[in-house]
Image 1 (cartoon, rainbow, N blue to C red):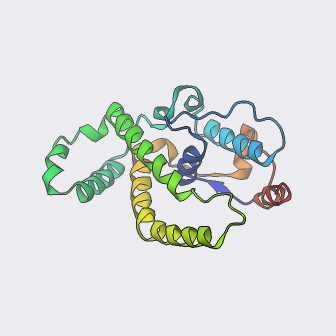
Image 2 (cartoon, helix red, strand yellow):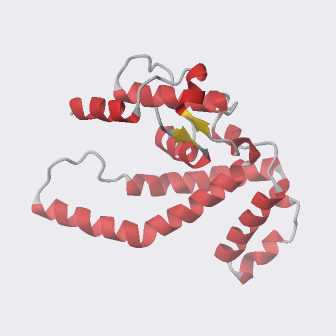
Amino acid sequence: MTGFWNVDRVLHECLRFSDDRGYIKVAGHSDDSPYSIKVRRFVAVMKAYGKEKVFNHGIGYLISETCSNDKINELEMFLRQNLGDKHSPDLTNPDLLKSVRYRKELFEALFSYRKSLYRIEDFWSGVMECSHAVALAYRLTSNLNQSHIKAVSDVTDRMLVLLMGDDYDKSFSEEELLPFGYPDVTDKELEDMIFDNW
């Protein structure tokens, strides 16, 4: 086992496993299918970060009680850059972004937006064979995604990560996650299992 988990990977797995309202449903995956292994990995990681409540109470429980000044300052910079001068007065209250409640509300709204982008990015997932016209559409939309949507997704991801706060400052190796129930299956073994199930 050589992989590791950090806040960026947590965010992307949240996007993968959450429904449109931000609820993460992971119950009932105890078999050894590749999907169940991915779910059990994610559950173990959330336990390691002390975020098990997210499974029953929604995406807002990802938000830390604390958020460092460095994160707040970077978040404010992103907001100012993307809002423009016209809306900058909205950020004149320096304590607004320090409020856990406000960060949760902002996170939930941005997460919903990011979930929509994720669906676009993942639109062609699972397509193994297609006609020439569909292949052309795939190449065209892939280029559009790379040229436009990826940049928007990257900025949104960074803001979401900053809003999540200080609980995610630590990264975990897969070995460190084993006591939390992380399946003892390497990425290569999991990849082989996925390939065998096609």
